[in-house]
Amino acid sequence: MKAVMVMFDSLNRHMLPPYGGDWTHAPNFSRLAERAVTFDHAYAGSLPCMPARRELHTGRHNFLHRSWGPLEPFDDSMPELLKQNGVYTHLVSDHPHYWEDGGATYHGRYHTWEFFRGQEGDPWKGQVADPVVPEDLKKVRFGVYRQDWVNRPHMATEDVHPQTLTFDAGLDFIRTNRDADRWFVQIETFDPHEPFFSHQPYKDLYPHAYEGPHFDWPDYKRVVEDPDQVEHARFEYAALLSMCDHSLGRVLDTMDELRLWEDTLLVVCTDHGLLLGEKGWWGKSVQPWFDELVHLPLFAWDPRSATAGARREALVQTVDLAPTFLEFFGVHRPRDMRGAPLPIAEDMPVREAGLFGAHGGHVNVTDGRHVYMRAPVSPDNAPLFEHTLMPTHMRGRFSPAELADLELAEPFDFTKGVRTLRTGGRTLVNPHHHGTLLFDLQTDPGQLTPLVDDDTELRMATLMVGLMRVEDAPASQYARLGLPAEGPVTREHLLVRAQRGQAERAVLPLPRAEEYPEGRLSLRTPLKALLSDPRAVEVLRRHLPGVVDSELLQMLGSAPLIDVAATAGPLFPVPRLRMVAEELARL
Image (cartoon, rainbow, N blue to C red; front, side, top):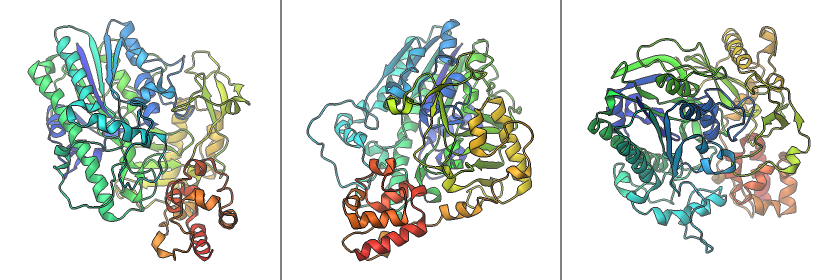
């Protein structure tokens, strides 16, 4: 028995032909749907990238306890459990986060691994002189932006693109070991994650008239670009999606050629989606976790049942992947795994509801029809704590200041008797700004009209609390969300109606920069220029208290104020931003 997992990053379900995407060129995803089982209600759990991969290893949600970080010493790991039980495991990937501080414990769980360099500002090629960068609509430019432009000339042709090299290596493993038994290979590409860097043959699949600035890397923010610029970015994503489809086709060709369908489990999945202008948003993480981000494409073939061309209605999640591979190889599933094997052979219920979210953000629950997004009760999004024995962020370690007030927490039921470090948590975007939201996907699939329905909210909040208790959520999460750690959820705990006003304010359109006189200072002025002008600082402090000293704004200081406002929406209430714009124009 053998298993192949093909994993993409930021793969949008709604843009794939098997899920109704009728304008993208992705024939191999259609081919896969004909050959395998397609899941219609697959959802993410812990978000974004590395929290999702921690779920892939552990079969357990982690976002209630921890932000982005490595596997913990007490975590079970599906590849490691396979390895310990006589299954050879191999990882091939171009996903750079595996080799940063916040992902450094994942690849070592496999027997062997290969890594291909160059994606999204990977610190790969050394170049002291600044790279040549075209006029670009991307305004928020961290160090990875510069590095990405250093790297791009080294990926000038498709054969040396890291995605291509990743699939080359994965297929080489399969061919080398075609006659061996009991192996698992994970072929994982960072694409179609931004930046949407692909080659001309894929761009040619989407002809359109565009003569504007370069734009293949949208910032995570509200859309302020023109419609033709939005369309162009969507076509750039689609071109990279078509490149992913081509790589998938190479896997399917190899399955055909080597007759692997007879004895090989195949799973094709992703971690999350990406907003490309839907609901007026780019990206992820800075807005609520809408359906485009968490309702995932998922395909599976199991040679034992040989079920092809079928669809499954069962509500499944990322936590179900680890149990699926363990069950296939006959490896015992640890008690701490909350997931269950995917119902590939026949459509059987897996769970009544699924929990999902990012640390410090909304805590969300869906039953497949309704989605309930619970915001914190307090504007300061507190109390929020990290529980970890591996204190690292995405690209760095926790600072001494972050650890100064740490305490030892009592063990959780999944830490195997081990106490964790508890220290103050943080999130750059406060979900309180968006309020608590409730949607009916049956009547409002675009999630454009939040419901106010006390009975439905009570039912969904009860499901949420039940799942939080199963996950042994910290007491701080119940306090942050205003939910009972013990006892029933009652109408006194409901929040949708109480937070309706802030939810409505959060979706007000941003003012357009051209709506106001230019003046010496305007919404188009970079924030760092405003902060150097005492009169502008006074305007900001008066209308937007707390903004000037915000850590986020210091990070985004080179961007125009309108783009900073689009990214840091909770700090920029639209009515006050309009007053700022009018006063700046008079300075």
